[in-house]
Length: 308
Image (tube, rainbow, N blue to C red; front, side, top):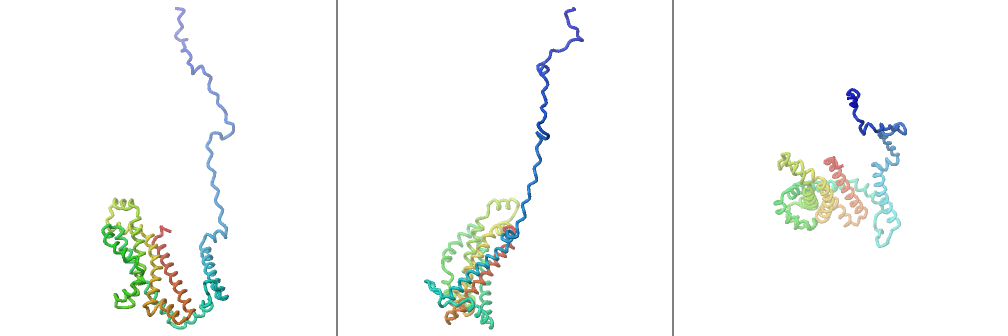
């Protein structure tokens, strides 16, 4: 009995964990060790200088445009003043001062302004009809395979024919000379607008069309809210190209069969050997075309604010 341990004095044998010494706590080498530092605030970019703001703004664009035009005028003045004759002859070309004198002379009578007004009316009417017809038909051709199969073969036959080649035919087709010139202008603008509209409709992502269908859009709503807005960048490209071709067609038609207009004014000046009026007519055509192209770009910005 004495060999047995007393119950109250019994203790379990020590385990391996109990026999190991407690881990030593390693103090940090410096205050903040092991703590993720907060991100430092990013330095703000320095405000651009006055010259950099000018170069990135509209002022630089206007300055470069002014330098471009001034360089052309300077070359024109020097070439005509010194009668440059190096394969390109400037012997009979009027100087800028002579053209400016002719501007003052022609503005003394309403004839020149009347010719400009008639040409602007013709270009706007023909271009408007070409826009409505070209965009409408282009959306249908690009959207529906059956319409494409019926329309495009005939369009591809007529498209390579220059608009100026239609002058004799248009005189026989239309009872009025004015309508025939507008028709020539229409043909010049129609095909660029049509082809760019077709390409714009075909380039729309099919995912957008399926998403609109899933949301319950009908065919008319799909054309109005998905197809037409998606094709607008290509449509305005076609409008810009068509405007340039329309001016070429209009001036050629006025020179051949017109009795009024800026093209007729230029051709009449050539017939009368009035070199200053020829240059004035050419410059007027360029300025009018520039204004029309600028109006199309402005309309594109208003119609596509998300694009800019």
